[in-house]
Amino acid sequence: MELSEALYRCNKCGFCQASCPFYQLTREEWANARGRLRLVREALEGRLAPSDKYALRLYRCFMCGACSATCPSGVPAEEVLLKTREELARKGFIPSPLEELGSRVISTGNISGEDKSLRLSWAQNLDFPVRRNGKPDFVYFVGCVSSLYPQAYGLPQSMVYLLEKRGVNYSVLGEEELCCGYPLLINGQVELAREIAKKNIAAVKETGAKVLITTCPSCYRMWKKFYPELLGEDNPVEVVHSSQWLAEAGLPLKPLEEKLTYHDPCDLGRGSGVYEEPRAFLKSIPGVGLVEMPLTRAEALCCGGGGNVESLEPSAGEGVAKMRLEQARLVGAKAVVTACPQCRRTLSRAARGSGLKVVDIVELAAKLLTD
Ligand code: SF4
Ligand code: SF4
Image (cartoon, rainbow, N blue to C red; front, side, top):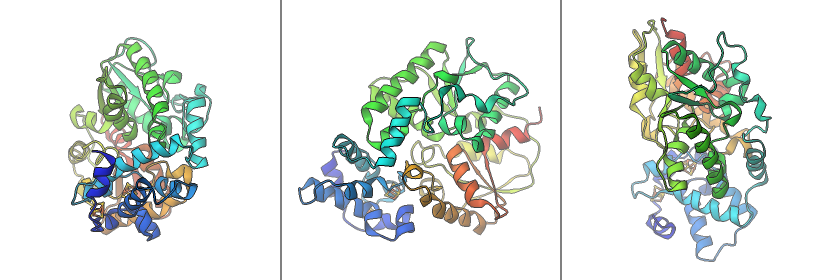
């Protein structure tokens, strides 16, 4: 949809207020889609000159897509924000913490700025060697958060354990894996995202694998939706999220007598339409009670870790994560299961001392596997 068509389609009904986590935090009009669209329209019609303050209002957003999903007029606000950020990036208005994030991704190939030789640190204490090279059928694309943030190491460790146990011929890319480019794309640095997409695709092609599996919803969405859009060609591999693989794998599982709820990661649910597979896997666990939170599937509340907000305003996500956990408590869940390393990090931090457990679906599967 053209930018101007999207902007004029907004009838200012305000439905997006209730669904916007940033509005819930700030209670300020600029923070919901209606306010942000108004700002973009003012700039487009020449009544507002782009400035650092204007840019900040368009970057302080989880890019969760809840506004677009709940808008009765079908305004694609997330798309408007992406297009506007592209323009702001061209004019040099990326807020400096996000400019630094983009530079880290370009200079080191990852979001944390670590040396690429540390990309397999998570695999050091495994009981078996992680597979690298060979002629794999599957490439496991680990992603920056799982590769370089120790709190998330359990996720790739569990994924390779499951792949080993199921006899899957897989390989990781190790130092050849670069950030998927999602942080660049949502910074508005589209050309840089395109360059990194080309390099990742070349590395995966080189392996000869037919399937790419990832445990990260942002990597999944990037590979599945944005790489073909950026490059104007089909993916050279089938792209699968770990929750989809789990739903099909038919794993033999120990029973779990526990009341669980499932948190939909924004990039996996709203962003990619994967709602049922994680739930199908959870329902296949003998004895499990799966309860739904009040806001679920397309209406799910972001965990607070979305967009590049953690780099821009580190404390902003915590309030949203607490709201999400409150929804889990309301339905009597003892554990929140998600399918994303970033949701797991953000929700786990907010759950400290609450008695609520937060776990990734892959870690849960590895724990319950009977052999
Ligand atoms: S819900 Fe849609 S139409 Fe209504 S104010 Fe928000 S963006 Fe505009
Ligand atoms: S993408 Fe999410 S945080 Fe951003 S304006 Fe829409 S609902 Fe609010």
